[in-house]
Image (cartoon, rainbow, N blue to C red; front, side, top):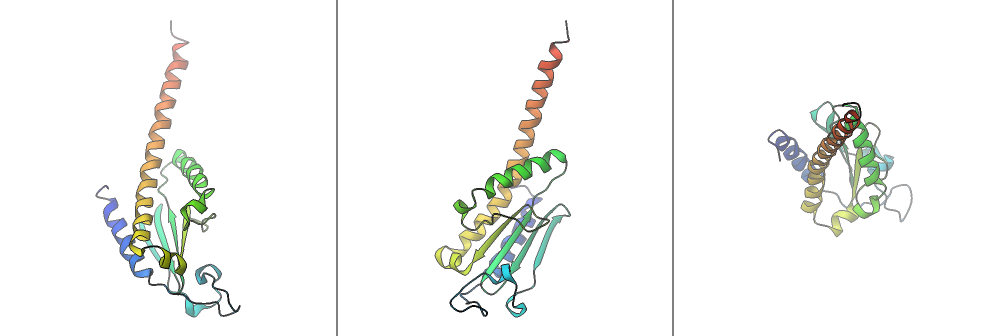
Length: 170
């Protein structure tokens, strides 16, 4: 992990650890239903204040806790048009396989690239520190993966251009 990324991920890790003190809380409108309050937002008294952690204006994390769920939305760094395309394709690929991740949402919150939803059921079935580790590791790895993809595309483009230009040299 780079030294510039470490304080950002540490802050996200500490905030998530504090926000994951969720409990089973049935819906107040419909009997025998337990739905994530952060998704429906019907009762303002069950929602906590959202927390926005910014590394830069283009890379940030929004944590929205409630009494029985936490929604984490991540905006990945996109410095240029190539990174925007790679991020869109990569996150779309991951979101199509959201059921394999169990806590990933199929559609991110507007303005963010990817979102996770952790409910009280997830926190009962899985270790909370492992959930936090997964989210932080995911944030670290997606940044690394997009950088590697960008290098790969640039290298391939350079090779194609050199092969194309060799046709014009004598």
